[in-house]
Length: 262
Image (cartoon, rainbow, N blue to C red):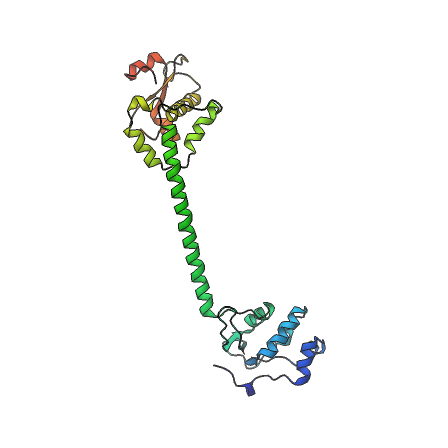
């Protein structure tokens, strides 16, 4: 509710021009804006001008006041919302009044603040959905290229790609691994063993086992053998490589597998 003008501190003509001109005597005098004062638009503009000149306008407000109740220091102003243009009387505490003055009077009403926050939230959600869609499209395209290249038994590695880098190209791929796994499971096993995917994985397993048969220590005609096919299609995963795959020489391999050459 707007406070009646007669109950508010009034600016005499001298005080008005003293504020406008930035003279120091206003700050040094005993005259202060009292609690429950109505600060009209003209006075607000003067206070803003003072703040822009570098004066501490907080000194113009009473620090102690006998009529301060539980609500503290409150002042009535009629700011104009910078968003919707609404010009409405509101009551604010001194801290918010000073913040408004230091912000050159830029004010946003509660309805607009709420709407802005809702718009920002919606924009973030839309941006998140857009990025997810772009990532899904990118992942789908990458998956198609991955299958066409790394899971094609008729394809081979470009010789410019170093052996130690080939596994990284596989394991770091941004693809849909569920689709990749299903495709691998649908392949004939002999075709799978001839893919760039398996050759990169097999070399990495051999490298980590120091290019030695894990049963006899031989380095002759090494092959990578599946101890289990439970995780077939996930051979690129480090834990699967460690637990499910074993390096065997040609002689030891024949004891565990019908396939002589991987």
